Length: 149
Image 1 (cartoon, helix red, strand yellow):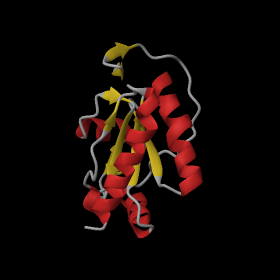
Image 2: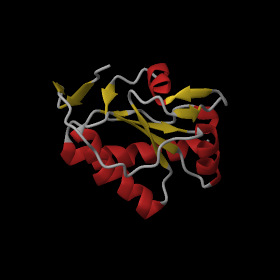
Image 3: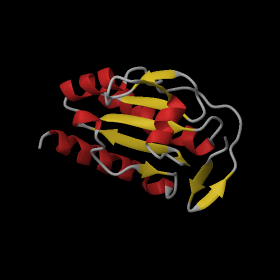
């Protein structure tokens, strides 16, 4: 299935190949528990293979944030049949989770807090690249604050 990619409100085609610099989600329940124990939300990046904007978000923002701050970040890949344990303990594929969460635009970055609930607005698409880092940091702050309420 082909998904649309949003850049500045324009649907774009995808390009082949990307570097995998974020860990694939394996058990969202366990990953969230570790994140919350560290006082941080769990960030999940929804990615599309070959998507240049996904690569930019991953390699320029999310992977460095993970390395520099210890922020827990995992990736789910559109179309992937790889298995992952959901927050409720059920086994699903990456694709099933993305459909369940109604992710339709790539990249999409989701911020999860207690109970596997979204703790900040999603960061959808890659519009306004000059401000992407600001919007990402703002949502991380919002999701982190939600953990302390």
